[in-house]
Amino acid sequence: MPPAAAVSARPAPTDPIALGADAPVAMRAGAPNAMPRAARVRSIDVLRGLVMIVMALDHTRDFFGNAAADPTNLATASAGLFLTRWITHFCAPVFFLLTGAGAYFSRGRRSPAELSRFLVSRGAWLMLLDFTVLRALLQFNIDYRVTILNVLWALGGSMIALAAISRLPMRGIVGVGVALIVLHDLADGVAASRFGALGPLWQVLHQPGLLVASSRAVVLLAYPVVPWIGVTAVGFALGHAFTWPAARRRALLLRLGLALCAAFVVLRALDAYGDPRPWTAQPTALRTALSFLNTTKYPPSLLFLLMTLGPALLVLRALDRRLDHGGADARPLPAALRPVLVFGRVPLFYFLLHFLIVHLLAVVVSAVRYGSVRGMFESPTLDRFPITQPPGWPLPLPWVYAAWVTVVLLAYPACWWYAALKARSTSRWLSYL
Image (cartoon, rainbow, N blue to C red; front, side, top):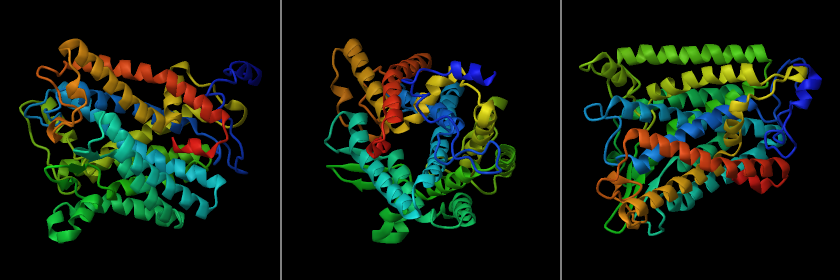
């Protein structure tokens, strides 16, 4: 498309996509198609938006599927249920990876000390949101009988750790990140009970489990932070790669993505290291393949991260090649990706909003089906989190997918509005939501 035509095809200035600083600025001298530190990177925003959309499927299943059923238990779960859960495994690793990359991009407009302060304050804010706002959206109560410290908790802790790690030379950052990802499985056999009174600290670092268990309150930590810190640190280094020339950047994404995929296949086949749960031969080839893919998320094993981050880097490379071009050859965003980009530019806003929508939808369904909404506001038991499901509540899987699509569609108008607001505003406070 000629430059004049490309200009005429751009959306109106009230469009958050047009206002989101797509145009490359502050390009490095001698680095054609290098990504600017201060501008948005569309490929990263689109990849983030994709995983945010898929993430809503998992949470919709939590509300409308059978909360007591383990979707990764191949003895009881159907292939469809397993794959519905498996595809959402990509969400958390990609989000932590891109959070690290976003931290690197923000370095271009902050000093190292300012960046560290921002990461600490942002991380503390996310941890507070997890314990307050997210908990309220999940349960629609504030009795704190049942609390799960979830992904925002680990994301906040990872950002606080990154505040210190980011002060290292780039090779040091890569080394710390890779070491945490590769070596943390060595501690799988170490139980928190070995540390006595310091056992809860070990749980925060490496072993998910109950931090508080009393008749009054239960607090479960689901996301130990050590491996997630590693992914975030590697993401920070990935952000540095977006200052390279396009050919070098894409070569890295291709080679690294293929290497991680190959490493997953080889290590999983050997079953010698990288995941506490071995794969086993099943009655059919399909079930055996599912067993091969059935790696551990809590905490994310080396094989879990290889399985998810390898394909993610290949998708990022494809998006980078299609979307991020400097100068006059910048391409317009395909129409199908415009909503995805909007979600990717307001991830925290979307994250909190979609929980509100899916829970409100559950309230409506409960009122229509049962004439009562009490279970939608009660603190559930841990094995039926996040709501107390009435008898006969779980929907068939196709209806779960229909509810997921509904949630995403309902979230889009508010996300579009907020993306436009963030793009127009210079307020620093908007970066916290």
